[in-house]
Image (cartoon, rainbow, N blue to C red; front, side):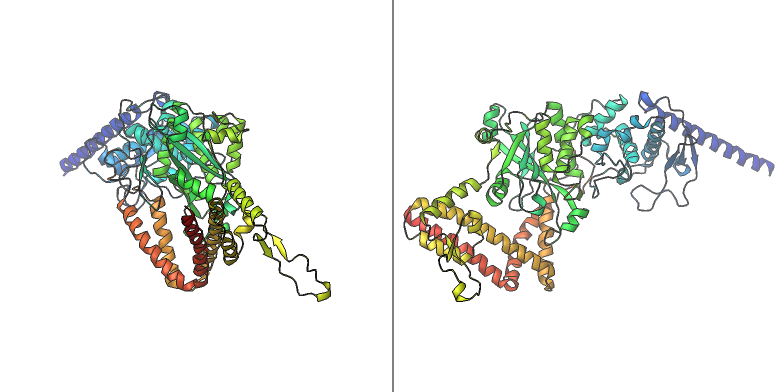
Length: 611
């Protein structure tokens, strides 16, 4: 019996000795991976029981503590349940994070080593307080533990967004262990490389996907934003508008591409242009001010054509578009586009009209491109604020802030149609003075007190004309087309097109407002479906497929997902359904829209007759 007990004790002793040797070898291997700046760490590492439940993979929803650093004792504790998985030839594989238990154990120890390293640093030296890391991690620079990526996608581990400290530690794992980290999060790789003076996998060649899909519900297209193909990046500023969300202008970027042999002047005038911006992903019938103030709209990147933006801002909203070339060197341009790609694949924040809005999102890209402490310290939340900052800090090139005409000649300013519309209106109203006037409604007063001299009021502007009732505008149209004059007809078509836009926009706003209060459940469901499909097309990507960060070859089958393609087709059908349903509910509004559209038809026919 004593012999059996001795044998058991010997086996137990040998097992413990073997486990101790394996653990020691594992700890030494992990420590050897640390950058030379961290090799001084002598943090104690031990294994203890930390969980009641059995070891499970990080893919499981059930929580499991793999390790923890205690600053007071400068000690790292790892779960003893990892002891059976400390060999590099670990065979158990899973589909998330570090893919097996050996790498999970190794990454956990490296993660805790980073916490231990940060504990040795002064506050100003900590990576978790470093502006560059905070900006690249979507953290508020003035509130380091408030993250803006509230609807994160393609993250290697969502735990990275729990705090700035954890963001640094999680990404440190991948910096040291994943050769593709250099490609998937290139700006972060360079930040660690610079801060730690360490370059793991420096010979790794990247095969990154630089295609992104256009956010157009009319057509599906791709854009390649390889830095070698982007000639310039412009800050595209839309002047202030009347809508609540537009009172400080709107911030976007214009990417300029062209043949390498073209001159810059030719490129700016005849190149291919794509506009990048941020919009609230609205799931409601109409924009809600309260929700906008409290950030209930997801903020996402939108990619569209310059022509679409000119149509929206110059033509429809009568706002200028100023295209200001940013003075970026090659490295700054690379940083801008790297972050742009990462934002496209990973980011979805909350859209606040006053803080985390189009300007705040846009300024972060400029901050990251320039990567200077001085610019990180600025907090700009309005488009006009960015405009002034660029002007005051000489961040632009070849743009004249004092000469509107020069910028128009150089294709750096796309003017509002307002001036041309005013000319068209002035031409017609001066020729048809009696026609461009409106009868004044008289109050019911004593006949003796009435003044009969002034029964009409002059229509003084395109704005007043646009607000006239549709049938009153038709009276003016019918009077003007009596005299066959092509120039007059063109002017008439210009001002009526603007009035048509104003009328239809007002009617659509009324319909949307009423729809939100409608008791017709079928109509509500159709409209909700319409919004869902538009969001799928505008913001949908293959972000849920394999990998994290910027996709590498093999991660995804297509940038344009089958969901986007099917949503595009379904959107057409749903639009027709909604239109038919709304024609019943909003009969009067649709009649007014048809009447307004018919005004344009009358002018078109008159134009054809004089050509």
